Figure 1 (cartoon, rainbow, N blue to C red):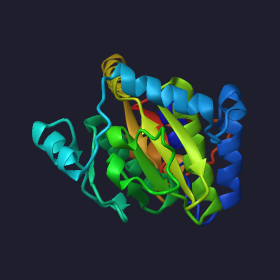
Figure 2: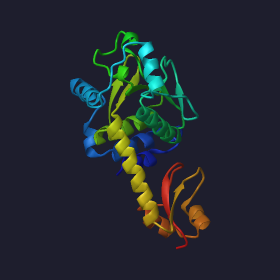
Figure 3: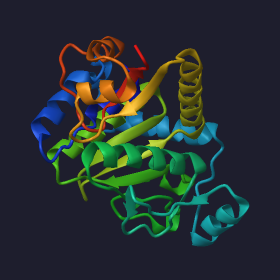
Figure 4: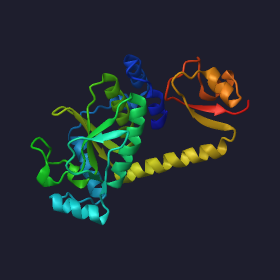
Length: 261
């Protein structure tokens, strides 16, 4: 199952069925991802530092150097939108790939979880690191971000499932921090950009190869019969196209709909 496939499967209204969401998230994680954790540690820090070196990133010293990197285009401004908020972010700038990650993740998170993602930190120069920050933190490079830990158990499970799956692909390192409760996420810009590019290319190829099949996002109250009637197909054809054993579907779920069968 692909990362986006996992995300689509987890898009359930968690306020109504938190236990089911958590169970699905656990069952759908690849075995290797289940074996991973968000505990961080020396090996995780090593991987983050290695990526910073491979990208030839500078550890920014102070606010003035942050501003110079913004003017030079190395860092871009991150603005809150309908899918995510910024809270307590002193320097709302990041590497372009980090902004792309926030944009994609927050849209999926809001659809799947029903609440906004909250980003609590982005680029932090060395002179503004908090007391409890690791001296090996990559926040000064602009490749890291912090995400507030939701009070919803189901939303936490959703986010942790996706972070673990993405970590398995080698595009980021994620750590569950306790003081204050949040997730530290270091994005590996070049691998992440390739991941998104490959994903986009596969989708384009699929659209070309799948004439007569369209994607449909399930809405609240939809049934397979309603969707089949709307697209001139049958319930059996929908089940076959999506490998469904029963008729149960969820709001936010992505279905492939064969037309006119």
